[in-house]
Image (cartoon, rainbow, N blue to C red; front, side, top):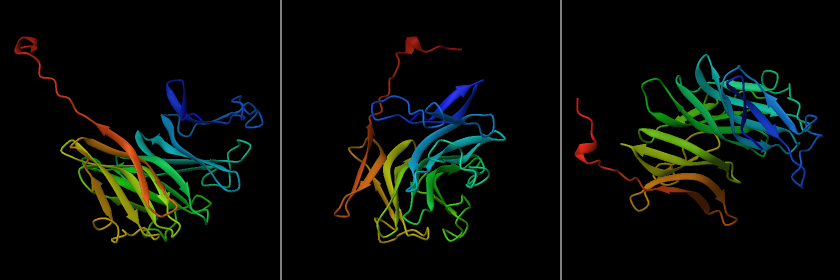
Amino acid sequence: MLPASYSDHHGRFVVTRFNSDGTLDNSFSGDGITTTDIYDDTEVIFSITRQSDGKILAGGYTFKDGIPEYALVRYNENGDIDESFGDDGIVVISIGTDFDLITSVIIQPDNKIIASGYSSDFDSDTDISIARFNPDGSLDYSFSGDGTLRTDIAEDDHSWQSLIQPDGKIITAGQSKQDGFAKMAIVRYNPDGSMDTTFGLEGIIELEIDTLQSIASSTILGPDGKLLVGGQLVLIQIMILPCENIDRY
């Protein structure tokens, strides 16, 4: 499945479905491809998941009045937009005032929807952000009081993937960055959105590996309840140019 298509210099949500042999499934939206234009601006899917009833949820961001915001679209199994969800199949919300982006969409056993990613305000740090929605696309106010939360660990925090434990606790994995240096960051929340202070240090684990930039981008829960986290280590190289290569004014 592809995250976005571009036409007339703007992006739109696009979902494609393939048969098991890799050919496009023409029973899906007629030709195997469905596109959704939300606000005639840049729109990108970063996460897609399938509900138990076959409906498809896609999450990412859309620009609204020049500001990126959380965007969710739900499709029926045949590729049509599910108009019973949100506003004619689409949900757009803002958590920060400057930037909001969904990187992970997961479905709880009760069909509530958890969208996680990161948000920021103007002239402020980027925080991990999470929103929980009822099955109809409305915000679930039993989660953190208003359906959304933000977690500020360091100067620049991102969530890249989330999961739900069998006991309903929510884990998100990403990064925390301070002074340009990133550590793996894993946060666990109780089902009501409060921080699970029994996990790590008051609910948060920050992990530095070999003094490299460390980013957690994927996580799964093993059958023994142990958490597996994968990601990336980045070695930063600084090149110092000889003086003769530096322009003088």
